[in-house]
Image (cartoon, rainbow, N blue to C red; front, side, top):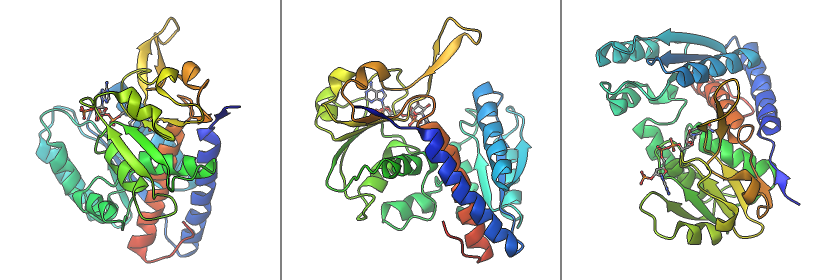
Amino acid sequence: MTTRIDGNEIADSVKSNVESCVETLGKDGVKPGLATVLMSEDSASETYVSMKQQACEAVGIESYHYEIPANAPEETLLKRIKSLNSKPEIHGILVQMPVPDHVNEQAVLEQIDPIKDVDGFHPENVGRLTIGNPRFKPCTPHGVQKLLNAVNEETEGKDVAIVGRSDIVGKPMMNLLIQKAKTGNATVTVCHSRTENLAEKTRNADIVIAAVGVPELIDGSMLSSGTVVIDVGVNRVEADNEKGYELVGDVDFDSAKTKASAITPVPGGVGPLTISMLLYNTVKAASLQEGVPTEL
Ligand code: NDP
């Protein structure tokens, strides 16, 4: 029997925890606030930002939105972030990536006050995660950790293959899973485009986490029976429907599910958790900045 891991259900339980923390903060006169900044005309980025705003409103987080023309100079974005850093009602700042090519992404990430860096991408927060003292865990890998916990999948002592080594998913995922903690303590193999014999690495793993951006790269033949499969990938592929496309993961769901003991679908797996963990980080940021403890 393969368990289909329901990301929406798990995300809802995170959101209801966040909502009750928002209420607790409210009793002390604190309303968590998240600023989203969009410097792009990409329709997917617009959709992601609007989903994040709606999710904030649904749990009582104040959402502030700023748009910067895609052809504006880098300085315009940096100045906007600087001004958001100084606004006390804004506890979290999220700049939707990717930014246009003429903007230095690293400069943008470093401009965000680390205490408001709810994505967890500022070098200070990356460093804290690496030494096992995280302030904000990056949302997608944190969401994967929540999914694994929710289905009682222990990582301690397990072999995990992560396919992908990006700064936003693969590397922080590795850092979370190798922590000396009950939710870590895994032995992790991080694979990438230069990895040889990828299938050997995934077949040797108890848990496979795919964060590649290549549609259906991992199929059932690359898995051993009983593997837990977490598919982070979200890829648009052409389809004969009204939209002209559909979303598929980095895992070929149909063949993988014949081997997996548990597997996340796309959509409806990791994606909903990513947004929930952003809300979680925003409430944590408000709690830290206002000195009001919560039950997170
Ligand atoms: P990146 O493009 O930044 O990184 C992709 C990684 O995959 C790189 O490390 C790359 O290797 C590796 N890779 C590429 N091709 C292969 C291959 N054939 N074999 C093995 N490794 C390969 O992607 P992201 O980490 O940003 O995103 C990955 C996927 O996750 C995307 O589909 C994205 O849309 C999705 N995503 C989903 C989120 C969600 O909330 N569900 C959130 C964030 C991302 P190398 O380093 O050598 O180039």
